[in-house]
Image (cartoon, rainbow, N blue to C red; front, side, top):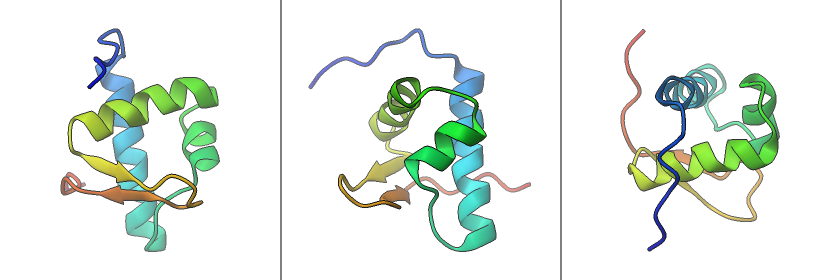
Length: 79
């Protein structure tokens, strides 16, 4: 298993997770990768690094090749 970059900003990581949670809560399905990148003001390659970290933390899972393939594993924090 490859080691993920530990230089990721923990606050941005939480912002990405929070966005996915809020989107799922609002619409009933997960956002696309483009929607995550746009909402979090980051490039797609950078967004993949943050999603990979969330996967490594068992907070989300991803289904490659599926437009809305993000699945929440960890319960979202209550607002």
